[in-house]
Length: 187
Image (cartoon, rainbow, N blue to C red):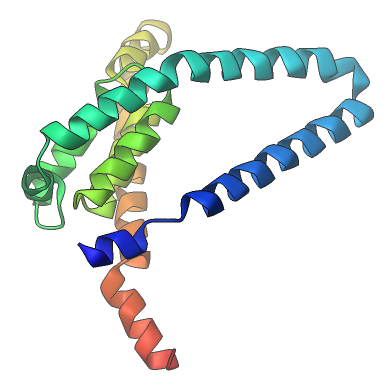
C-alpha cells in the first residue's frame, strides 16, 4: 500500500503543471491571434466548442470511471487485460476500443484506470488506437462512402499498425528493461 501511495503525484504539483499548460495555451493562442488576426475568430469559436464539449461530457465520464474503479476488481483486469492475458486480452482491447462512439479524450481516464489496475501497456495502447480509428459506427459509414474493399484494407492495416505500436511501446516501457538500464548505468 505504501508503494502505491508513493507513486501517486502530489496534487499541488499537478495543479502547478495544469496552470503552466493553461498559461502556455494562452500565450500560444495570443501569438497566433497576433500573427493571423483574420483567423482568430474561427480559432476562438472552435476552441470554445471543444471546451464546451469537454465540460459537458467529462464530469459524467469521471463519475463512470469512479464507479468502474469500485465495481471492477483488480484481479479481473489483470486476468483479462494483464501481461498474461495473451490473444484474449488483445481481442478484448480491440472490442472495447471499437465499441464506444464518444470522443477519444474519454478513453484516457479509462486507460489510466486500467493501467493502475494491472492492464498491460500493449492492451491499453491497442484499446486507445482502436477507440481512435476502429469504431464500428465509423467503419459502417466508411463502407457506405468508400466501399467495402477500401474499408477492409484500411481496417486490417490500421489494426496491424496499432498492434505493432502497442508491442513496441510495451517493449520500450517494460519495467524489467528499465530496471536493467538503471543497474547497468549505475544509477
